[in-house]
Amino acid sequence: MKYNKIIPCLDTKDGRVVKGVSFTDLKDISDPVEIAEYYSKSGADELVFLDITATTEGRKTLLDVLRKTAEKVTIPLTVGGGITCIEEAEAVFEAGADKIGVNSAAVKRPELINELSEKFGKEKVVSAIDGKRKDNKFFVCVKGGTEVTGIDAVEWAAECEKRGAGEILLTSFDADGTKKGYDIEMTKAIADAVKIPVTASGGAGSLEHIYEALTKGGAQNALVASLFHFKELSVKQVKEYLNKRGVSVDMTMYPN
Image: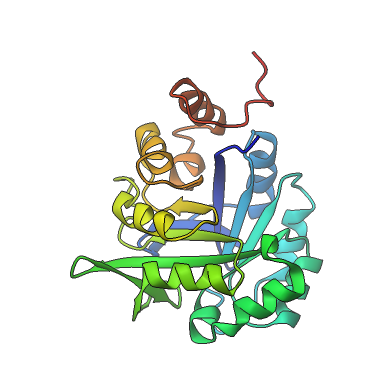
């Protein structure tokens, strides 16, 4: 049975989990190893580990932090940030990742998605898309949200699928960290444009927001950061709410 997944996100900078608004004003949250272990034990379906300044700082993912984090989790771990080639992807997998996410490097050289998919299998390749609204359209952002391209986000998602991506991780630059809700219109547009799973990210501020992303937005999965990091909600509370409203979630960790 396929479930809608609830996925905590660990945005990391300098080896620490941070959280900001629209990728700025970053606040220190926790040690990634400790918080990853907590989420792994709390019923999360997967974890996303993003080294959010790797690309803008022109460096690779912090493998030592990733390795220690991966040792503490028993659920799938998707890792993104600074991956630009097969060799770097191999190093991330060797450090404990189950899937890799690529954004800026793939926008710059789309063939990277083909290469990664052919080497590791599409189920291990996630195309991360940071989308921003402009003139009632959705455009791709790169370099940690610091640069808005002229690339249509919906068309890019479809191309990523054709090139071999197995999933889309869609983050709304405008909604990120605001807790005012996911960008349902953008999520729905991209979910309708592809057949692979779409994970909605950016803006979760309530149980209703998460429900809307998985229903009106057409996303298969919901990424959550602030609500979990600041302990406003737990994974269990989210899943119980969704379960009661008829959304298919994995409740096996919470027997009745």
